[in-house]
Length: 328
Ligand SMILES: Nc1ncnc2c1ncn2[C@@H]1O[C@H](COP(=O)(O)OP(=O)(O)OP(=O)(O)O)[C@@H](O)[C@H]1O
Ligand SMILES: [Mg+2]
Image 1 (tube, rainbow, N blue to C red):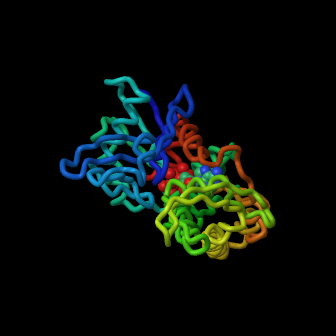
Image 2: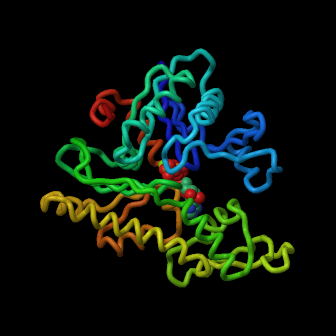
Image 3: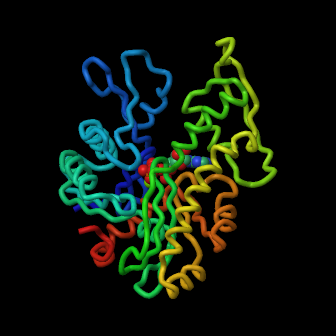
């Protein structure tokens, strides 16, 4: 049986295939013909059309804040992704990476969608375990670790060991909130209306929590008063506010989780530091910022966006480990 780890993320779906490594990372996005409901484009091709489609076409994200919102669209998209990485007729066992504390009903939706897409055996494991496994941190019963994964729609925060989550939560805060807030912020400060692709790109290129970071980029939009196209140069300082607001919120919740821990666990946590993952952790200076806020060392893996699916790959390839961390 072929084994896969699948991170069906709000923004990006990542797939790890045992024996090959990461074989797919594509936008969790489809375009739909409004009158017929027919799907016209999948994945990255669909996302490129965001803000550019004619009236008859909708750009849809079937996973919203970590949760499947359209089983039909999610199923078709998952099937499309599987066709890209698995030969037809192959029997597949998959481990789905889900947020910390993912509800049973949410899991059932993923299960139905996975079954409909032809997956024979479906397992689930929570993001924090997979995030640290993907960063080569060995899990044991006696050595608790602390991890924060900041995705597009969900942030998972947890203190845990191989025995399970000691304290943890997930919250619907992530990169998408920043993108939306940046659109409003650019409208207020530059009187310029920009689209969501531009906003995301802006965050990902000049977004920074380093004080005095002076990177800048030119963005195109529509002048709010004249309605004419206009370009402006935007710097890191111009968009630091709509990024910091959400990072501060996440830090506040991380503090709450830390405060719930028994003293012994707290001490171990402080010694081990914090493990960061998720695409948003690519923001320059984020690890140092979190480290200062939480007063603990922060570790950031080479490619934080891939840490969870890499960990999923580790787990799905190791049945004994999978039995320990999978959700029953
Ligand atoms: N260089 C970067 N700087 C800032 N943000 C980035 C960067 N690269 C990616 N991101 C953001 O990371 C988010 C995607 O990260 P990730 O793939 O971890 O999320 P996801 O798994 O799809 O979502 P979720 O886990 O919330 O369901 C997006 O909001 C994206 O804009
Ligand atoms: Mg994710």
